[in-house]
Image (cartoon, rainbow, N blue to C red; front, side, top):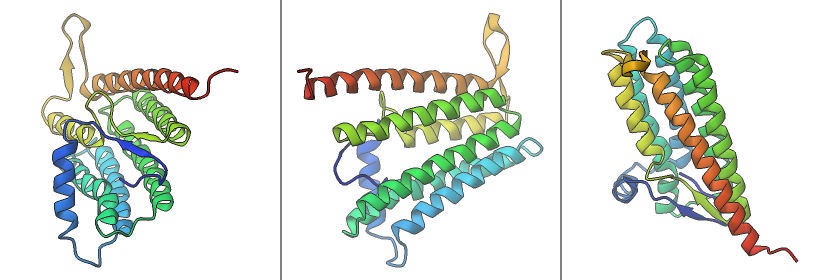
Length: 223
């Protein structure tokens, strides 16, 4: 993922070390004609396809396999674009940071729109999850500008881990799209997962705001 020139990336997800080695290995073997811009655009198209496939899965569950494949393609494009630029020493830090993350926001919006249309997730849950994602994204970008640290993960979870969970969920939908919560009844699997994700993002937002506010207050004490 592309990054801002004046910051340090903080990426402590579970798969980050092995993923980084794999991405560098792939980057060294990509044809010269493939550029970071191509990969960024591929990631957006893949996310649009995933959202569209979720919507189609309302009528044909086989579309869920397209979702899983599209998430894999999205990982390839979104994770590799910045790595390719760094390997080739062809970085455009400001351009890459801006374009990459603007398209990430568009992509997640398309994905959640498709989920809201799929019947597997209640639209209000999809909306809540999108709002939580956008709030966390806004805080991350503001923190990057304010303290120079671009945080890419929380409690061991980053974009790759979230894609894997989403792919597992899409696979599970082809079986029973509902989950039994015992005395609370049966609910849509993705409503439960979406609610947990939205709450998790809200907790991450609160923790990040508190930590960054304290850090910035120490850097700029009251006179």
